[in-house]
Length: 165
Image (tube, rainbow, N blue to C red; front, side, top):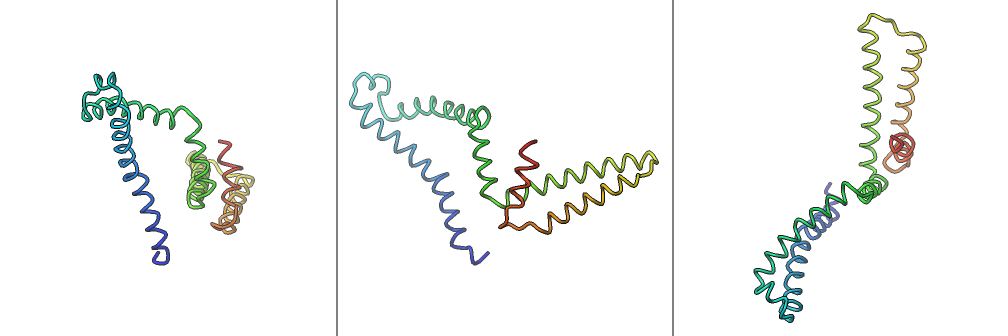
């Protein structure tokens, strides 16, 4: 962790700047510039916005709900957010690893539950079922032992198994 301190600080700086400071600064800048360069120079608009405070209140009361709607549409009604997440998965090996691990865990739990149900009914496992279990264990073990954060094993698994779901 200590060897990454500079990059971690750079990341935190960009998050603070981009998420908070630049957003607030841009909003204030837009309001000031539009009011003093546009509204003040047009007498008809001065009747709607008699001073800067009214301008901020009116624009905020319209703008904030409008931007909430645009954000909602971005996340819920378009493919834009899905595309962003696809890019994160493609470019972030840790995110990819989490997705693959969760998929493997769920697959294993489902198979274990099926076996437990069968055993709870006092049914014996057939040789074929035992073979399938051993085969699955070997397959998962081979996959887990061969993958690294640098090779493309997790990405190939995501593309093959998870994205089709």
